[in-house]
Image 1 (cartoon, rainbow, N blue to C red):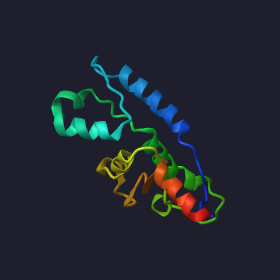
Image 2: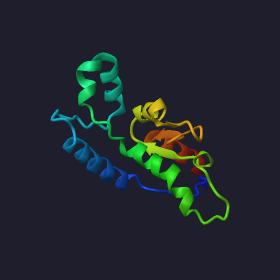
Image 3: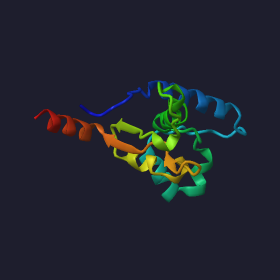
Length: 138
């Protein structure tokens, strides 16, 4: 019905993000680290507070972006296909509760120059997803 080939949860990516942030804090140069998963707040901080706050923001990816990296890098290895699949041949869609996740996915930080693809190709909000489901069921 939806044309999905695989469905994966980003809950494990959330655990990975927490662990990575802890490791980053351990190896930081004694400065406090702020771990934020809100793409809107990151954009706000970059535009308004720049050099004051940015050195203190963790560089750990959000669960959405961690899962995007995993799906694009490792899922093709596990596909039951005799044909080799590269990251640019995987179309990764996430369903997220916030419109700012669209902004996050479009950042240049999450673009793979080698394969000319993003970690996350498309982000739809939960509201958009429900609208599409209702449309398909009518």
